[in-house]
Length: 396
Image: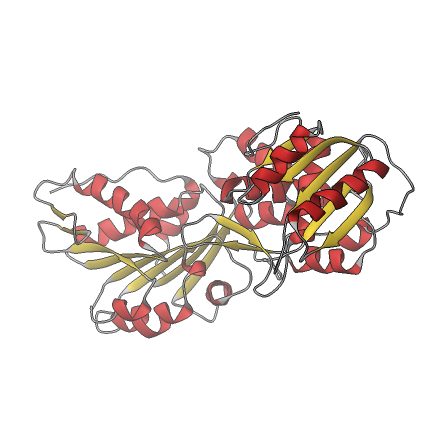
């Protein structure tokens, strides 16, 4: 029986031909690392071996399963068990998809090969306590494929692969641009629209020392000075009441902060009144106001007063785009903020986390606030966008 696997691009071919037992690939998005890992699993199983495709969660593992199922359906006599995510091949070999969400669930099998997808987003003990022992009796191999997540255990494995004394290990770092099937203008567009650090990690596969940091050059931007008045201002308003704070921020069209007001634990009508008192001093051209939950009736109230309001519905997707716009403004030196220490602290502490699903989450560290950050991000939208990216538009 002859099975023809899909063709490999040069980078994939280099890894495929390498004879090292353990291969570590730090790759940019869309490089083709998942397909390479799937092909390796299927190839081992077609030769009668046992292989696992492992990912941080089942949603990510489903990507590999779809590829495995597609290839397996082309093999005469292959038996696909959807419920178990298991394929058994005519020669007796098999491959199965697993989740590393619970490392203890990975114990018990003797394996010839493991492809560990996005392993930098899994716990290290999934490898050390469960997967590595599973390779011992059959002297199996493994391929670790992931985009970096700072300098964690995946980085340590990658360093091991760079050490010539480690004969069983080999590692590579492939940026997205090394995939010849990805159009160069797509990568250029991502570079222009993403903050530098995110582009470095996600597309250049860089191991960043402080990978969670979102805003750079914060201190360089803290040069704005208070003004008695401002023209053509963009407002950002993030509501709060008890644990959270309401923050009002105003920027000039040139990106210079002229107003920063923070307060909490007061009635919503007083919050509106405090906003209106600020508006009497600093006239807005446009206002981006949080509309989530209790923000909706407040937005309606401001609209009835004839103010140029855009109600912004903050979702996981719209927040990502809003924060990345603000981070890019800091990197490009297009924004100046007041040297308020609390504002600076929030900006410097704000973190990026990639979730097991692969999505990006931006938030303050546990126990801290992000009200200043969100208000500033809304104000930046107010001066740079005619339409909110992902928000619900309501004009006066």
